[in-house]
Image (cartoon, rainbow, N blue to C red; front, top):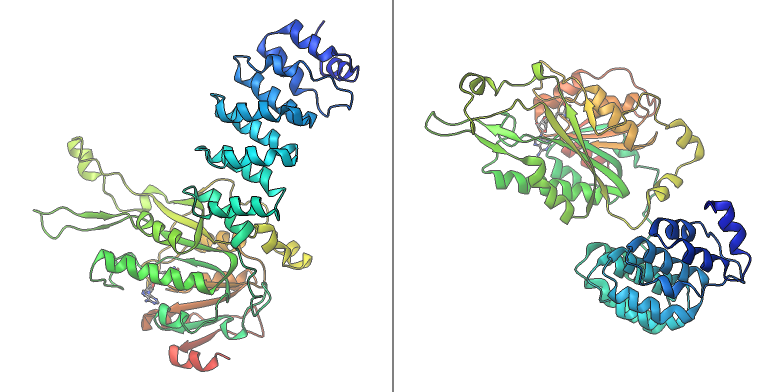
Amino acid sequence: MFLTKEYIKELKTNGNGAIGHLVMQYKDSNSITFILENLGQLPDNFDDSFLPDILQHKNSDVRLWVVKTMGKTGNNAYLPTLKQVALKDEDTTVRREAVSSIGRMRDPAGKEILFKILHDKDPKVLSQAIRGLLVFKGDEKVDKHLRELINHPNETVRTVIYKEYFATKKANSIQPHTESYDYLKNVVVNGDTIETMKLLQDESIHLTFTSPPYYNARDYSIYQSYQHYIDFLAEVFKEVHRITKEGRFLIVNTSPIIIPRISRSHSSKRYPIPFDIHPYLMKMGWEFIDDIVWLKPEASVKNRIGGFMQHRKPLGYKPNSVTEYLMVYRKSTEKLLDWNIREYDQKIVNESKVPDGYENTNVWKIDPCFDKIHSAVFPVELCKRVIQYYSYKGDLVFDPFGGSGTVGKTAKSLNRYFFLTEKDKSYFEYMESKKTGEIFDNFQTKFSTLWEFQKTIK
Ligand SMILES: C[S@@+](CC[C@H](N)C(=O)[O-])C[C@H]1O[C@@H](n2cnc3c(N)ncnc32)[C@H](O)[C@@H]1O
């Protein structure tokens, strides 16, 4: 008889051991797996007595489907067998499935087994036990066992336990999630970004997109040492974290840089900025989301390969750097992205939909932009994508390192508000000189010193 899904469906309702006979008849692992996989929901009169006999099968897929089917029967007589598989099977996927089956039975008799599995070394097996036990949340013994996992070495386990038992309901933010303060809308402050941010309330902004100074590679910022520079960035992003609304995004554009050698007897030095600031961001409560690579045409970047082209000596290979990173982070929260999205009116959600032509991959080919006054400006296309993909209409977009104001200009053209800080007076005045037509009539761009800005905060 040729095995088909229809045939299996027909046999399973017979209730006279027909499936068991079929399994014994075929014996080979592919057929047994096919039969068990296609059983679907089990009828009340399903004869499951053949299951223990094939649990010793050498093929792990067969064993996996046997324990899964045992779980589906809801027959708690299988609990001791499932316990043995959960603790002893050599295949960790089978062990995980056995724990899942114990959990699926929702039988109080399974609790003691699941407690034992909370000590398992495989976090995936252990997570299934947590899942099974959470069905009994509120039971004193269950809560006690689960709470103890708050110091577990595995971060996913800790996060689940934190969310279930330790996350205190936050006092509602003073402001609805979608709104922002008028005194921050379309404002450019000429001042140090940390000093300025210190004046802001917690949870004031929706999105930050920025390109920090490139250590000492350009002349607008001079840091005493690389560590001073990294510490400075860490302090900036800590403040950004505080003023960012729950679950919203930070996109940092950086790339490894090169500091030229001081003489021919020394070598130049590369500094991997994105990789060095990443651990700081993770520690301060940013969740890593994506790494987007900005790819530039080779003709637009500095030529480093020239020497190698001549000598071709291994170790002396220095490729032209045609990429920069856009590291995407989200302010950590137990809330899912859906929560953020649901806070908006349907009208805003519809109006903010990303138009056709969006980028499918994390490699964005965009030409760099050159400006006669500022040496490191964002291309508008880059800003446009980030703002469209990571904010909604009417949101407040922040750039702590405003530069020539590309983030502000682009945010405004996309019906978002912006807030920029820029320390350098000449760049601030450059932005002011470019002030053009306003999109938000009620919120003309305001250019203030830190002192003037401070007076506008209510
Ligand atoms: C890489 S540029 C940003 C360019 C900008 N993305 C644009 O499109 O024009 C970095 C800027 O940060 C400014 N800056 C450096 N340190 C600062 C600080 N402590 N506070 C505010 N701005 C600062 C620099 O003057 C520079 O204009």
